Image (cartoon, rainbow, N blue to C red; front, side):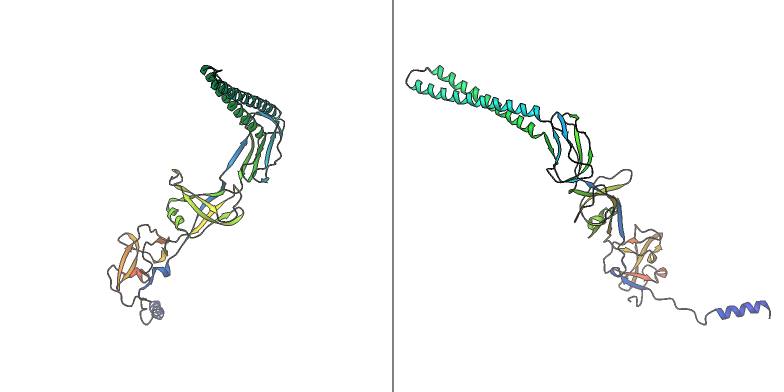
Length: 335
């Protein structure tokens, strides 16, 4: 048989007897087809207080009874300083204060006696005024001695340096035997309780993070639930991100733990495969009273789910949409 007849016979066998029917366009509610993609951003746990605890007086260091890596309670002794000079200064201040109080008592007694004599005509008014002025001067000297005593007591109290909060010891910045001047750093601490998560969030994800029902920290130390506290309005000019601060709902991760925050976007997104292009714009076809209406999605991109700012009840064509035209009447589009 001629080869041309063989090709014709093969084509007849391969061709269906009847043309296949094109499936009718099908529309479904947005709520049934919407996607809620998971978002994430790089993050790190940071202590709100990273403190370098310093000496407040000049003295030799006698002891540094904490070690790097320890977790210590609030009030724990961090350093003991040689307090002998300050204790001597306290003794001098206390003695000066006692002397001033004695002079004050004597001056007060002399003034009372002078007033008694003055009432009997044995003391002039000028002499009484002089005694009263002397009492005021001695009272001021006593107040000054009281202030000096309080200052000396505070200095002695600073001979023992204590942790201001529950903390992790980061560094020992001084050594036993060194002379510490006022302001010399002794120990570096990281707050063990007040720990936040700092996350760098893309501008487009800022609103979805604010509306998220649940946010998790995934990284060093496992997965932990978070609660959003604030988002900075300042934008990083290079990375084009904003910084979000979150707190741990339960036990915090250790300061410095790195990872990411993860949350689910509550805004509805449409699958990429139902998008169509009309007039150079990407969008979807909606069913409105049996009529197909093209709805453009300005933020849509080829091959990616598209954000759909539509009511949950909006009916969207999920099949047969490629052949639809705007304004085309549809029969039996409901599932």
